Amino acid sequence: MMSSIYARIERKGPQAATRGVLTAQVWDYLRRAFAIGFGA
Figure 1 (cartoon, rainbow, N blue to C red):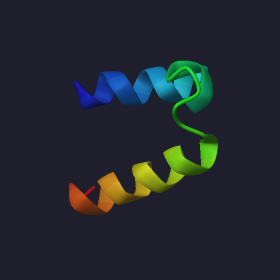
Figure 2: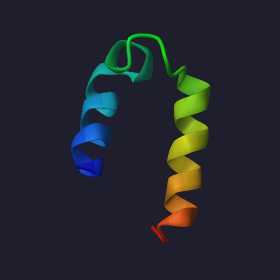
Figure 3: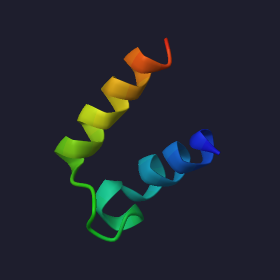
């Protein structure tokens, strides 16, 4: 499920994929935080 969400956000951009909920800066932070948390 996470890979599907990542793919959609990367394909459309964070603001379009989340209808304005995520900005590019917030998505960058979350992506890095998830990578650390999930050991990627």
